[in-house]
Image (tube, rainbow, N blue to C red; front, side):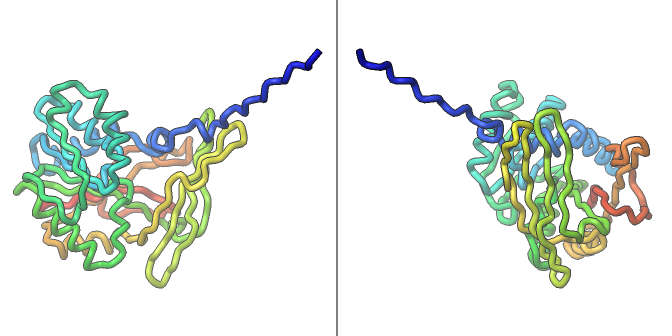
Length: 276
């Protein structure tokens, strides 16, 4: 009598293999609701009216642009990004969840932010330090100049930046979530030209890893350098919004206030609003 052949044991996929890097990124470092709250308040404070037209440069999955059109029936948004795959992910996971009217007020453009032409915008934003891909001063000023030309007469350009003496170090920082650990790695930094390479990794509770889920090849721009470049691009003034500190958690509290001076913290995140 022939023996029955045993069925091969099918290996279960690891948590890393089942994960979606864009979902992990958005859950770990993005809060577009708070970001849009800030943009709304800052523009109202600077210009005395509500903004209605927003362009999100380096938009990635366009989460912020989608949040913008959800806020008010008069809001319109444009998202611009070079990567067609990440734009398609955004269409499937964010745009598809919008109502028909909201989708009609959103445009996604697969293009270069230094070349794209759009109607005058109340707000142009460049978040998550994405513009740090421009490593030379003239290239950065060229981008800033094009943004200025894309703004309405009373438009505002808002970008984020980070700094502090920890930003110049080779290091790893971890943030812990229920099922995984987010790892921010500053892999290299050259103090001669400011060139840095950074990575985002994810480690899961089953021991699996998603290494270099995202990698960045940047120049670390300092706050004074950025403000000088914005002035050279023709912006009339810049306003720095500094994050408050939560003494209990030992971390930023998510509240940003306009400042003229700030403490030399080891690590900080800020917004700069450049007024046309």
